[in-house]
Image (cartoon, rainbow, N blue to C red):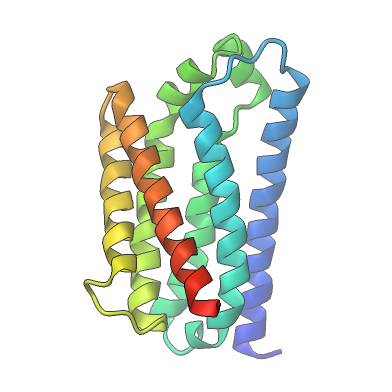
Length: 189
């Protein structure tokens, strides 16, 4: 087994554990759906993290051979799913969280979103690093600019008690995803 194959399997196992924890959290919320009061930023980040995790796993195959060229690539390849794990653990409520917050997702999200936002900011910092090294992007390309904005908006939301900080982070993330997928769409068509 080559280093690249070992790394792909290792990252896939970590992402598999992340997806398992994610689905358990969704299951808890569906089971308690009558008691759960939804909160838009919480639901938004649940969907975004799932999309981002699947995207990372899918794109990782393209870059797996380059990750074994140096230790930095290896650490980035393991860092991203590790930070996803941290973000998911603070985004998905446990049974005790649902009881403690009486199903109020706004209260739960405000109580636990700080570490989730910091984890997302770190993920986008690592994405920027992979963009520069693996994709051959220029430092001021649109991808790097949007990733930097997502990181900054997530950090602002992490350390701000203001509700609109969540919405700013959501808007910047939506713009990033729209930009990324529209660029990818037009590159392939």
